[in-house]
Length: 303
Image (cartoon, rainbow, N blue to C red; front, side, top):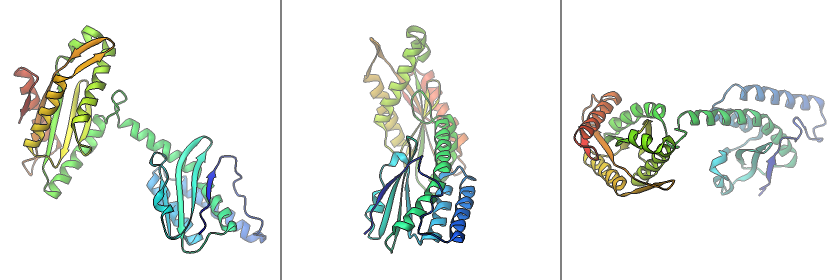
């Protein structure tokens, strides 16, 4: 089995056709193919589309069975290495930036001359892949709250309707919780906005510890947070809301030598009507939250 590992680096020569390709026409054909491929790849910023285009090209040229690509944060691709087929594996690096790794499998062994040409195809992938990753990072950043690190209101609005449609289609329970930190303005006025920011991050951590990985948690704005809960009945959502309320109340938040106790109010709504949509379900949870705040705060109310 051929199992070479390569690191593609920035100063490697692009278009370095192996010396064994003596025929000028063949060299020119490869160069033309690389130019066409480069143009195709530069026409998209979507990583999935980019890898699909690249995969189609190398499969046709090198009789590749499968191409496995892993994002930089995903680590090494063990699926490819465990394949019974011949494979070659590349860590993609441009300058000092990791672009992930890619692995190719096929029935026949890879020969040095083919690998040299394949690496030229990889060079055509590097620049568009870097652009796609940067675009992906920008999109991800726009959907996350920079203070708490959780997803923001824009992300919630994008997810809400989709999650409701999914619940309706699968006939699953679905619930919403809106959480508000009680008297948060007083905390800012007493201790300053810097302490207020610490509180927001601390509350985020507390709530995250109370929830499942499948629960979707958003900072809606200011001191308000929203939880979207798939496969959760109203009773289940109320239990979770009460657990969050109790945990916050029992926690002493130490913020730069200030020992601060907090409470939260929570409103719960549940998908019970086929005509429910994101707007109506949110309004119901918001109405329940308003009731909790108007009737003493530090409590859970359901619509």
